[in-house]
Image 1 (cartoon, rainbow, N blue to C red):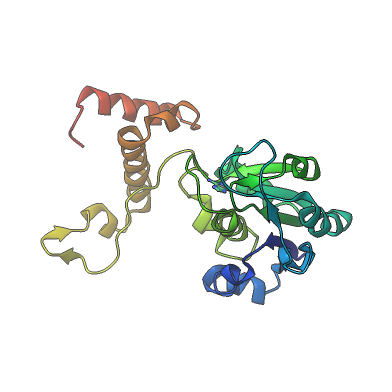
Image 2 (cartoon, rainbow, N blue to C red):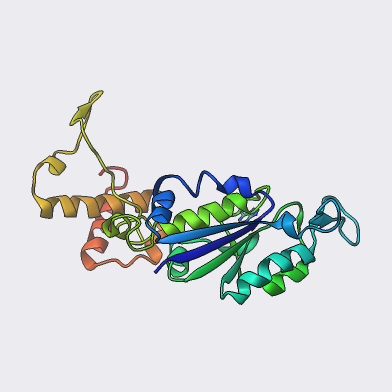
Length: 244
Ligand code: ADE
């Protein structure tokens, strides 16, 4: 089944290359996903196809008017799209949310611009999503981030095994990876990875993932599914803090 993703934006050109390139482009070619990018200005008001105006009550910046956004969003809603407004005040995009959205048959991503959007537009959206606690100049890059995070999860987009072990999918950061050459500028690949002993390799990787998570993102350990063996390993880390 092909997932449908529509985007509403005043900068459709920003989507041209990213949606044609790499894994997303290949997923579209394979019909795992199809995209529709809609220029909000087609619904702009007056001779200048205006989509924004001054804020009531005064203040800096412009606010996106509701009529063009309603005109663009309503037909997508009518087609059954789940409408998502990209907004720094939205719920945070996480691995779990990306996996949930990857199961939706039809998403419509609405990109805000200027200082904000007329509050009444929020009545027309199903959810608001933020990609992090920083403010960008518009929702276009966040929409592309969401598309990238979701499309790579569609069955067939990449090898399933490539995202089963993702940081966050396992609840832990990923273990270190190496490829050729075996020795580079005095830095050697850990011998266990050359041993051919898959059991040993798995244990080493789990240990490294735990170590990296404990060092960099100890907050993740609170919700990660951990085995008794994992807890023993973590205990050893705190016993010999600093060494591996
Ligand atoms: N628009 C501007 N900043 C944003 C953010 N951090 N996430 C989603 N949409 C945005």
